[in-house]
Image: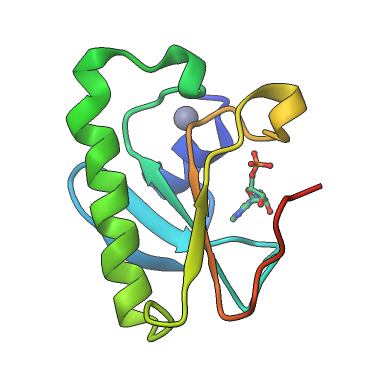
Length: 114
Ligand code: AMP
Ligand code: ZN
């Protein structure tokens, strides 16, 4: 999608601090971290939100979790714990219309979120 911020990051039109990349997905540092470690795990395929997910995307979405596990292990906070979150739609707090998993770690996280 030409006007999508995260598609522009995938295409290299906007810079990002990349952590991990495969042909299907990209992991990069969030520009405004909410924890000592805050990365975004995104599919390279443009999917606007969880609402647009189809059964054909199930393997792709599974790969986001595997990537998060790897990045958490590499970040050395996996044993202490971390959180993965998908915000969906306005009430869910989604501000970028390209499906993304937040991976937060490095501190004790509160529950429930606001
Ligand atoms: P959400 O509010 O769930 O849609 O999350 C969007 C996330 O994208 C926020 O945590 C933002 O800080 C992050 N973000 C916005 N622009 C950029 C950017 N250019 N590079 C990296 N992260 C970004
Ligand atoms: Zn996109």
